[in-house]
Length: 261
Image (cartoon, rainbow, N blue to C red):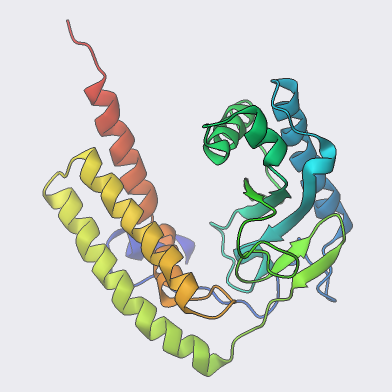
């Protein structure tokens, strides 16, 4: 059955389903919707290792600058699937860092530090990767009680900042129909990319469009980030389209930097 499904997906015989589960990810969450002890401790340890790494390379970050650490994204909601990472956000007072490094994009810097830190580490929690981001505590929509859109669970406080709300079957069917239309549009663009051997710049623009449409839909919808654009993006990822574009981009870029005899 799994082989047949992969064959059908590979040859575009049917549209990959958007998964909407009846309960939260059982490896992470207990039946009472509290985060299990082992993943909670593991995720906090990972975050503080990352913070310690930034401190070790000289970034002026103090432990007390960290205001909160929360789990968000699909694994804190009902639409997780096998491709879902565990998304962690560090809420930090970045004024000390910004003051020491005027004119520097703090968030680009910390992202680069994260990539360097992860380069020699394979971090997996129950088979899932972990993605870490940093936001400033004073940034709009990140104040107390308003951390990001959708559900969020504070790791140090061991409590929900905003609990997930499971949508009704009617709401899900409506969203799936709208998502299917968006997904078919994405697939058409995806096929055109390959058919016309588009450049890495065009492919990057296509990926950016997927991300921006997904992000912009959050601001128009409810606080639960289950939008047709989110569904369509995840369908593209499940069928392998997003990964194929990334691989194609890297292949083209590598050719551009090849010196031949």
